[in-house]
Length: 258
Picture 1 (cartoon, rainbow, N blue to C red):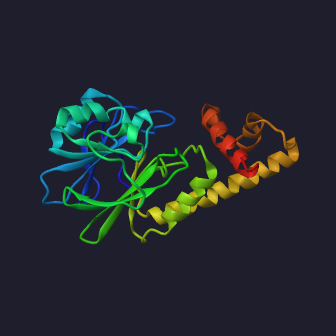
Picture 2 (tube, rainbow, N blue to C red):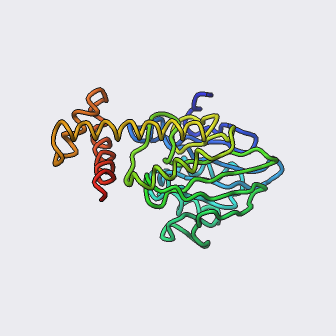
């Protein structure tokens, strides 16, 4: 896929979706947060998905691109949601999210909800697992679809999970998407087929579960998450062991029925 643009540049990705990359790179955010701007070709206004941190130069670039009709958040984490109030104040746009606390001048999103804005048809999928309020958002125009995945599916690598059971269900739901539905993630490059990548994610999670089961058999059923990380993630850079431990805790809760 196409490489990310320089920070602050608007890059068209599909006929209806463009991205502005926030300057907040890191081990958890990859190159930075993708702020997505969506609209039909004949629409004067845009929908902004995940404005990112309260990073005024980044948000000003987004606000100046086109009139903002609506701001949507895929989940509550600050690298996606913190800048929403600033952008709402600047543009007058409402803010919608699954968590009512994050909303402004509009009701919360609901699972399986459909709405139209900026000339596009949107379909909300509640996809908990990374967080309990995570959603994916399918945008459709003239029969072509793209799926905004937030942190449920990343453009590279895998995501940190807080609750494995719901996350596996969410992945199975994404696997049912129509072939050729482009994935527009919260971090990393866009991907050509969300169903295919969700299938890869599911296979990876099942493999990790088998590795954790083997680690428990070797270390004992009362093994601490850190012990399991040191065994299962031995080939992973140690800077990623802390988020790996969060995922291991979720896997242990799942295996132990917690």
